[in-house]
Image (cartoon, rainbow, N blue to C red):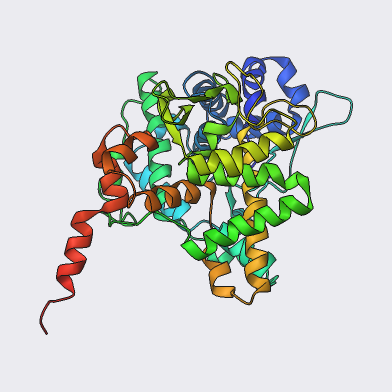
Length: 431
């Protein structure tokens, strides 16, 4: 196997590093051991390269699984390129190799592209510690957008296969590749494994990167479709109580301008009903939230939300209509265990809610509207609530509700006065 995976799952990487230079490694990773031996015989310092990569992933990268995977994927792919395409060790990387690597990932060989996401590089051999290579793994994956997947599954029912020749690296992925590679190579230079970092130099002259940026309005749901959300989820919950969680979650994200992580269980915070409270002013209710950067804020809770969403949801959970002081019941508890749900579970609930609405739109013959939200995510709900609130509260108040450090951020995202003024002026330009 020419392109053999070289890193195991994120949780197993520390153990892989610990046994790399021991006799145990050949027993646990027999095919990887043979692969590295063959590279060593060809003059490539493969084991030392791999050791640097595993140390980087273990000691440098943070605890976020998404971040770890992004760095792991890029660094591993770059190392395989060096070994297989250039027949060199990481020690010999220079400007030319970085530039050729970017060419390579921009248009990779079709044989190295998987049609579907292959999560595991290795699989466990039954009743042993042996890790067997997953022969279906590939360095690249042809991923469909969420909109395409929903369009095929729920709207057009088009089951066409995804041809590999449509694989294309987008600008965001290219920027991420440069960023990840830069951090990895920088670490190698700091460890004196490399003498210099050529990544930024190559990036400046990259023929694929598009410079500059244009204003992109936040994704929102129009008023008619949002009303359909309320009606559809309410009907679903009336008919099947299992959808009460979906209804509460979607309405909370939209009405309270929340990020989905702010209702999920995290290492440092479990959202509980005790975080709802009456403000000391006596004017209304607030929700205590920990947002990005562990920044605390108070979100105002409308009376309509209290009356039509919160009390109904708490009744479904068998609780008193209103939260009590210091109540430690999770806001989003698991149906099976009662423990607070993690973000993945909440994301799945939001996806199920969107699917219900898409199916309803298709049933009503509103295919275009269904397609307009086929790529939607939970963050669309926050954007929708914020956009609608602009006509009701000041920009400063909205910035505080959203947890933005500066009102300038809120204005640039939701108002974009410079963009709108330019568009308005452009309409009157003479022929």
